[in-house]
Length: 264
Image (tube, rainbow, N blue to C red; front, side):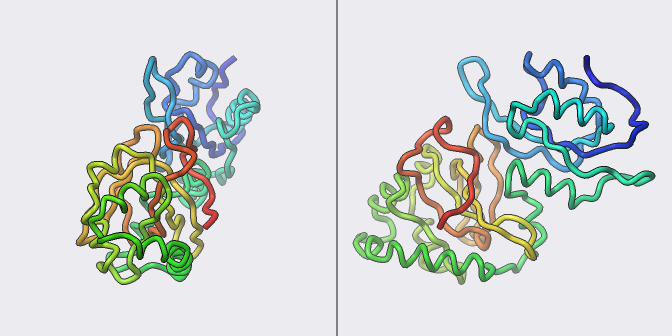
């Protein structure tokens, strides 16, 4: 039976994936839709819709504790379908934003709010510049073999994972010119890996996101990146990017995860 009630035993945050709850298999969880959502819906890969795939999402809701436990028990065999979060303090106006964002990052590690808090003149952190240096050193010999920044070899090697585009530490520079010369309208046809710094500035970590690049702005360094599953593009600032490349083994949405830890 669906869990309903007024929250007399207290309230709790829950992360729910497979949102919105519109499929037949969601019938036992549909009652969750009546509760308030906190924070944005975040990408959670894609899900089958007839013969195609549509974007799947994850959201954070505040629900009565017994309803949260019911949902968790009902989905215990489905990883990350329902994840229990913090309890809400009695009499509070709402959940702590940090608790909401922590749950959301468990579903998708990069949130637009991460870069928004950096400020307009933000520079790459030591974590990013160190990771970039390692990537540059690893491909220095291959980069020297290209005939120029507009070489079709750069594009071909990038999309299959033989070459990585690594941004300039001081933007704009040679890397910005290289990306400007790449046929970005071709890149959107390929599944790519965006290695990126996630989280607030005082506690960032590196992750690899899978998706497609739909545009690049050379002056600002903004990359428009569409997460795997057909999600709308999000704007990613260059100071957060470690590298962009392809995956040698995984070339389609069905083969690649939405994200994974960065392994250098």
